Image (cartoon, rainbow, N blue to C red; front, side, top):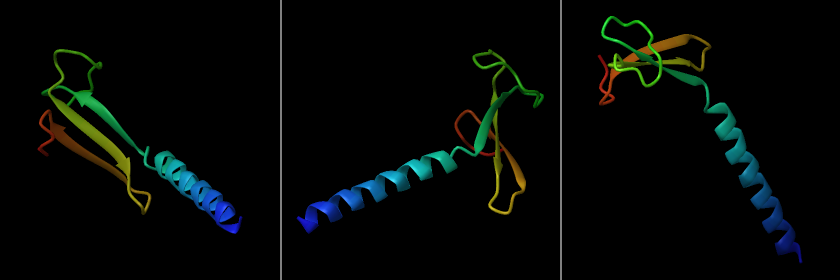
Length: 73
């Protein structure tokens, strides 16, 4: 019977760990931008680049720009 309790406890801990990881991994925003690096609407024909805005572990704001093939520019 102890093994069933340990199995339930380990399953609960694993589930909580996965949920916490999913919540804290959502700290970035992807903004579509055009050739002049101006934000555009999603689905616009002017969408050429993606600007990824995230927060570092030190709390600094990071902005990176990628083309549509996910290559940095």
